[in-house]
Structure formats: structure tokens, C-alpha cells
Image 1: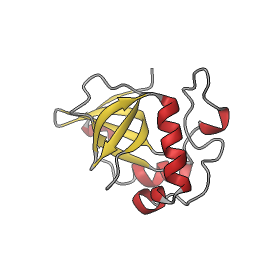
Image 2: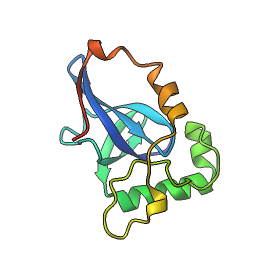
Image 3: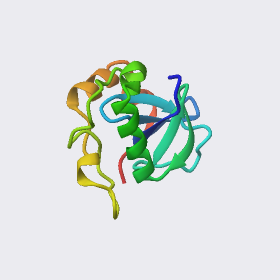
Length: 131
């Protein structure tokens, strides 16, 4: 990734002593290193650059940034997500006051299945499930 892109942490695990996460970018789920974010948890949003979570941010800011990146076609270039508005049902919801419902919902099964095919078997690492 060339951009710092916001995504939602959907799963956390440890790989050889390093905290890792599955991060959903509105339809594409990627493995991300959480070494710089020791307090990051499932449901948090993080800015990701070069496979590393760099900082946490609030959901409203994350969703607005994702919407703008997608409208500009930047997510297609970086993640292979088509340049269309994020449809309802494409991001997991951890909504709070003032965040529109259409901006958050679960990832598409195809994207999650494709992302999981490149990961090691769960038995090779300790996992943390959603709280």
C-alpha cells in the first residue's frame, strides 16, 4: 500500500511473538502488523501503511476517509476495490452517534475467503476473538 488507509480491526492474533490483525478496508481484508499499536483491539480503526497499523482513529473519520478514497478510485489502485460508493453491508458496524448506517456493515464473504486462503492455519498462532 502506498497510502495510509483506514481499516477496522476484525481479528487479532499473535504470530511468532508479534501482534497481528485482520483489518477490513470496506471489502478487502488484509493482514496487518500491530507492533506499533499494543493497545489496539477488535473494532478499533487504524491507519495502515506498508502493512503496519500506525495510529488509531475514530470510526466517523475512518469511514469518511474510506468513502473519499473509494470515490477517487484510490482503493481500486491500492486494494482492488471497485470505484463505487461503499454499499450498505460492506463494513462491520461499531457505529456510534452521528455515523450513518449506510457507512458500516460486514465484509463481503468472497473478500474474506480470498484473504483467509493466504493465512497460516489457526493452530499455528494464538487468536483473540471479538469481544
